[in-house]
Length: 427
Image 1 (cartoon, rainbow, N blue to C red):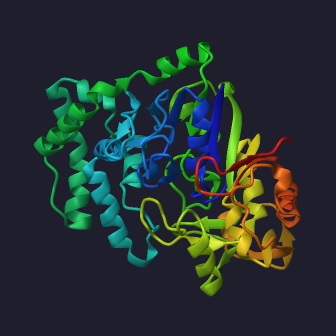
Image 2: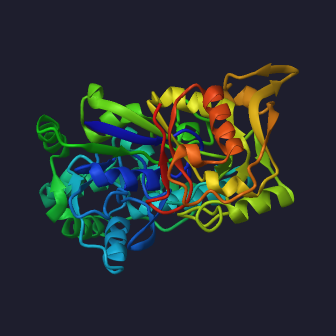
């Protein structure tokens, strides 16, 4: 069976923990989109890890970890990450890389940095990982697939020469930076070939056979619905689809094979980077939640940037879950809220004096003011609780109120940072 684990909101929902947890009963875990521009923080028996490209199931010796064709593959970062976990005592994972994955080039990272520098105050808040320039090249058909590393030297150099004509025009006349050379780019690609060659695979064929054999497969998404380039808070979005539906494309499987979609929501809201964020809070209130949140504070796993904080947003979460095709909601970091006497929940948006519970396009979202309903807190530590019925009444009321508002079943509740801090709820 194929299960997708995706985010309902702005990313940073806790997908890594849920994937790590579900991987125990999975055979294959696939990253199907995005690059090393976001991270999944995982705490397990080996320690605490921030993964950026590796799937979050690499900590089990029975799993195969796959980099799908939809991923923005930064080869040095991938193998530095592998070394980083192995150096901490994790057994060398079994890794496969799609021969159709495209590679993030060093010049993509430079173009990302140069453009943010050029835009100054009007920048997109990029992580400067080269993701937007990478996907621009992919869809302009001037990117490099892993399979092209195995082409003959002259054909590859001819393509490099064609590509860098455009790149050098921008470097010279827009950014006033050093130019690329054919030999320099070719040398980089040959370094990448040496690193990745043992792992390259026809992933779609591998998965076709795995599905026929009845293997359990996990698709692991990056970021969340609000960062989807079609359905999110455009233009402050990422450059690849964050939706479960794209998992079929980014992994190379039929869409009808995805039987279960676990959409991860935080019990409050957070976001890294620019963009509309209606339930955002500020000042001491935000600082306190940020300090207590996550697994040691709410800071980006990739950038280290302080996350923007907010109360749970039912409007955005209902929309995000609907787009994902949610079958199950995993509700994370609920334990963090135990210090609050009262907990505001955003249940609607006031736009020009009218209240809506439907998530609007960005032009209208800019005008939205949160409409809150305040629920009583439970004022105690809920870590260690394993049964839903043992949670404090106000805690259960909070979960059930949000479940009713978003209209999707909350079947998993995370009440701590480690793999074992989970409550399963039968619905």
